[in-house]
Length: 493
Image (cartoon, rainbow, N blue to C red; front, side):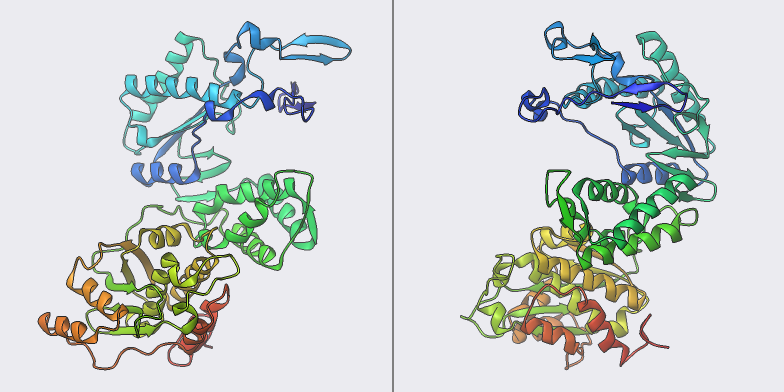
């Protein structure tokens, strides 16, 4: 088939995945041809290193795959017919499963040579197949040196670069430009989709919102574009789970997929946020840390067991504490709908610690930056990711924490700590085992002025602990309880 180019020429596209059962790609082990792509997150890191007002440039290869010839033996697999005549493609083919990996090796080698020659830091370079983007501080000439070095080396080794008459393909050092499909403006420190791309994406999302079902390939297309934008949208990572669920339902692009209510709910979030943020949203720092004066809360959870009374989850800070015992369902280690036994799902149980802390400690955490210390690496990873494909309860708890933080105006971070590595971490561990003698002994040694009574616990959280099931409205239910005691965004008029 063919695809028209902007300059009026036509690109011939060969599908080496057809016919099924007897195609070239079925004989290729793609694991032997890995491709390491860049991402919006990597580019955001580069921009924040360069700083506001940074200069950017973009270098694009012309006819990228045509730079690499295939072996004489393999070229015999690349015959095709066109207008009644037979042709043999002598270079890499766009539709071949190994082409991207083979080309990526060459592209990375060229970037390495250029970066070395120009002494340009690689953490400010993003190479994505035939696109190479780089950024440098506004008061530096390093980007011009990198750009000129790339052009010179490309000429020496026979790499054909795209002309700069189309800024979407390639542009010289500038404060505004298109990178990985997104327009960045480093003066305003904003991002945007161009008007045509924005209109097309919103229209495609609207069609899915109005549909009852669609082909798998359309979900792949929409979800892929959303994943590219996700790092730019506040709280975006908490609205991907159901999109990814339907995105991976089938490997057959023509299969018809029923669109669930939860899928549409998250899709509507993206429809709203993309419209709101495009052209106005500020560039988010993916590695932003909370300030040193953040409130620190230490939490710990025990596994469920019927052999010892009082096992549960505890949270403690310098001026308050909270404790919640496990329900019979958790202690009996009941199996959930996804096949996991709740009493041993430690990633989920440990996440209940921050959930208990931010809701019970609302009076101290409201409008504050908070660091929750937990001793489970999986819990930290799941919250940072925003969801868990393997544990639905972890996703429920993660969404609830995010919702409550938004309602209270709190900025939160969940970090890993070694078990019992600090006095307060040891106190949280004692609470999780209902060892109040040890808890108060440590509090006395540290001269902490803790109240005798623990912090209030939300009735909605207590009810959910009795029957822990996936429930994406858990955060709203807890916020509703808090709203009866304090002002909460979205719940009080």
